[in-house]
Image (cartoon, rainbow, N blue to C red; front, side, top):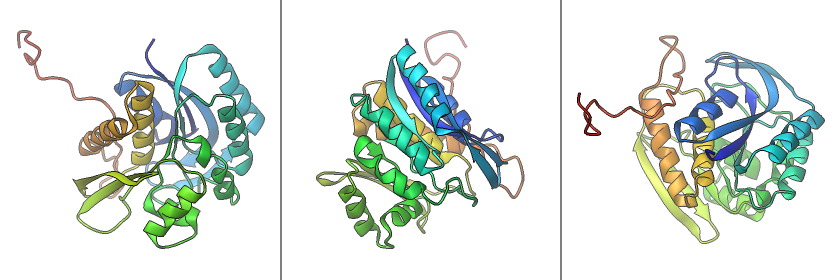
Length: 266
């Protein structure tokens, strides 16, 4: 069947981020998303107002049934919400060490509003050595490493056991966004794209789930990163804006070929 990506994420009722972002991105790239709901959130396309976490045991049961039934080829970790949930997920990963894991360390929404309890940052540290790659933005990297110096933050996250770090540069100043992939040998690759105007809701979820789909499809990490970044760039370029002064919602579908592009009559 299509490559299966198991996604641990919260439910965003606006459909911009969380589970819906995962499902749309995974499907667009040819995969099948099996979704494990970690939390119910109160949010719209502009702001997070609160959330209620699903019980850790219920999350464990959801995941165990999927893992026993479907050929899960990659796991994407998004909103976990608490250290207790992170601990349950860590136990699951330990029992499935051959499945690549993409960890998006969600602590807060881009627009503001917490998506985690105070103890989650500490709980995430247990997951770092179990993940193939973690995808923090610069704000999350600084917070998790407890330093304002980004190069030092990368070194500290590596010391916590992170094997690969895709540092997202969208929160840094400048006319371009620079993402950096770090590994054991230091900087492995980087990408630079022009910054689009406006704010986007769900771009981080989209990148992580697209990256997980690439790994599930058998791509190398660097190839999966490149594919995911291209996919996100296209999704943001086509984004919808429900309010004239609000955040954009990514359009997570692959563009259709023009009529006649495949040799068929226009």
